[in-house]
Length: 415
Image (cartoon, rainbow, N blue to C red; front, side, top):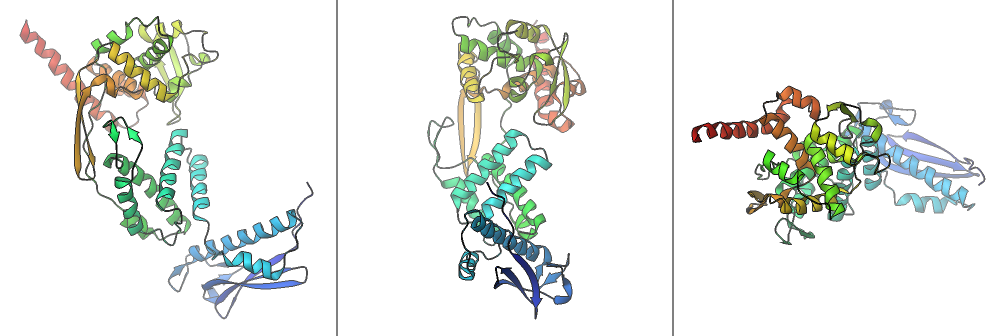
């Protein structure tokens, strides 16, 4: 491929306060309006002086518009040179006329995700969640721009999430009309991240993020975990005739005895397994944890040693693991009734199901924490295994452990 040569020049000047972009190439000259007026004394070297205002418009916004026009200009000339086409003044004006100096909304949001991933070291699942919310925002309004991104528009986005049809969900075994309030709040939290980022870049006013603060009813969900007898029933269940269920049970129980998240257990390599512990660099927080092995976790590792290549445990997707864990839970007769409640808009939906239907991979981590605290292990020791940095994150589990210990003490009264 032959190299692209830059055969054009451009400059931005303030003529009688009006900003104009002048382009010269091959004896051609085109003057393009920028639709901005500035104070000439506050404009230097093609940009507005930082922190200045021009007709109540911040310099950062004008400079971003100018940068967007320059990028568009570079793209037009690059494409013409690459395709060896002659670019006429009329053609340049026609291609630039559709651009008003505003950056492409969806491409800019891609930059937001990339910046978060690289500069703020977002985990893979965080990136995935953010992209899913932005995809939902695009379904809501594919023609959205920074100029139309207002608090009022985002309030309509909240209503859209409450009312638009979704695929069939396990929650009610019927077609849902929208997301639950808890999910909407999580999605709106991601949108507020994006708004703060866009305001910091000068694309929007910071008032948009300040004014967008949806208030929705929510209800605390119970912490689903296996009590020690339930965990033992699952561990001792004979699954030798079904390899997939056997591997899913072992994977889940290993999380129950080590506190590992699904992502860290799935990525655990054989070289990370030491004689008396495992060393894990967590994917979510990037913390290096040293978790001592007990007889249960050691037995599971020994059972799968050398069977999965460089991995210490069976490899399975989280969706298939959750499905198989529920099946194993049913076989182990983990049928204690659990009541779950959610708000959909202003409607409170309550459902009571056997506990095995609510088992997921993350219940393994909760099982470890609740049982460790119930055994009397100090919270600060448990936090060293789990990687929690804030004591407040342990508070719900401590409350549950206190209830278990109180119930156990009452057994003395039965003697």
